[in-house]
Length: 233
Image 1 (cartoon, rainbow, N blue to C red):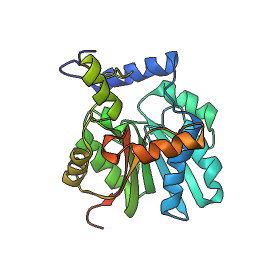
Image 2: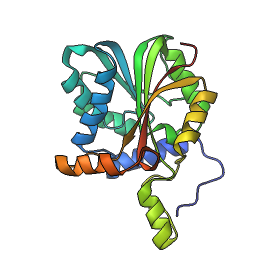
Image 3: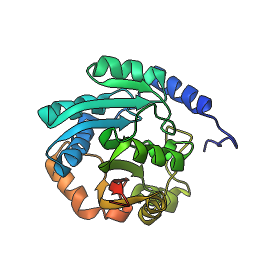
Image 4: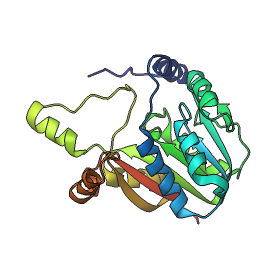
């Protein structure tokens, strides 16, 4: 298990992700990106402006744009890694991209209809500041689609049972929590969870996907997709 430093800076995190995107860009498969896009498009018929926060190499940006068509006016992306943004510019050049930490976005108040944050919030140095920024730059009735990992994923539980340790991940700075703990965190930061959806990847075969959906309980899923709004709405 990698040992986390006691103190980390934005420069530390930035250097790590620049190296990751130089060596082997982080990406899900297209089936996963289509699933995430479907969750966004189910909630509203139209969005004027969406931000993909910590957009990485722009793979989801491209998939969302292809599926949304005219249902989304503008799509933007931000990331702390310049290497990731270089890839995103090639992957989806139509997006407005900005190099920025989630804790300090160079964006005016009330800019976006929705913010999407896929598997990234758990890596932020200051989650409270990041969520405050997300709320600031989103409209009063805006939506937040936040994908975070489960501490009690069933495969980790099996690994602990048979091997005494959890499965290894490819990033050193990461937080894990149970479903209720994530919900409590969001509530403490002024977000109201509208819906919680389990995510265990998307199988190539539909029967395998149906089986996963049927037998894996929400509380033991790989990730949770939390669809949130500001608590005051």
